[in-house]
Image (tube, rainbow, N blue to C red):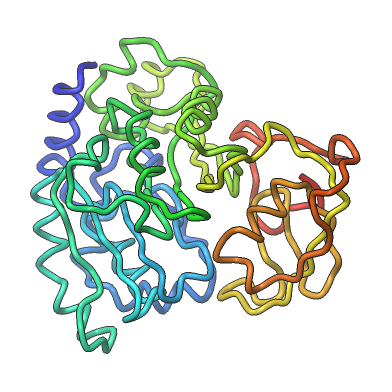
Length: 353
């Protein structure tokens, strides 16, 4: 599918075909009901029209966001923008970028309503019209964001490497891209990639996970970390037949803007101790599907994990043990998760890399 066809398909599907999330034909772009308790009251303060036109496939709400500057690429009706706006507070800012006029109109119509709902003296949200593959063309300063989020949108892009490259350029050193999207266990045939409904439903453009890992690393995101994943069920008989044996997953990854991360998990004899207190993870910090770090417990980590905690906004929540002065080989238990190994979150996390 050409970039022009992809853009037109997405704009038509999300601007005109879909009016609410009930119009979706699959469960791909649909977040499960289960969510952390601290998120529920935040969602209750978001306008119904915004929520009803939400089409995300995950929960892009990492912890430790007070005062942060956040960019939501493919922000749609603004649900995640308004959710994150409550977490960054008046000292922070959340900027949404989307190319669909109808979705932007919904998001922009409720800026002042949400400001009053949140009790802020000034609005800490704004929305820009633009393409997520062309972030450099928008009035956004390089290296000015602490966090870039995206919810079931990268799969819709005809130029995914440009999306990752643009996000990397906008992040501060130690910043993070935290995003949910749809992945496939194989590269899809052209007929599936060009199917308008499958493309609009986030399946036709789904990333083959090995291709995603290569794209992320090429953009400067070393050692991508999988946070959660879940299989997607395709119930529509016609769509299921068109997809054949391909299997799809909704997965959440975190990518860190840290230079020099190593290709593998290396052992330098390091450890961390979680002090506790991060919102929603007060007693156990979840870095990814392999790292559930209990408060007060000495937790051995590889060099990459040490830096993901030490060189980022998470540093104030940890005590750090060790340095990079001595190398002990590959970190014991080193492994790489991918969407073919479903992760349920804290319950699935273990103390290894």
